[in-house]
Length: 65
Image (cartoon, rainbow, N blue to C red; front, side):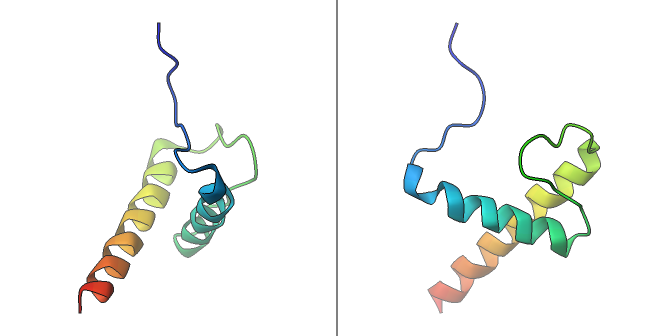
């Protein structure tokens, strides 16, 4: 059976992605810790992912101008 989970395709980007995730979490009021965050609700995790997506789309739109 194949391994499940997130895989970093560009290892050099791992640190930047981690910082980006922490920044997005602060913006939506979620207290992320380095490492395990299994105590967070699905709603909290979803709000972080949603904020990251929103910021990526905004950055892309700015680059399109």
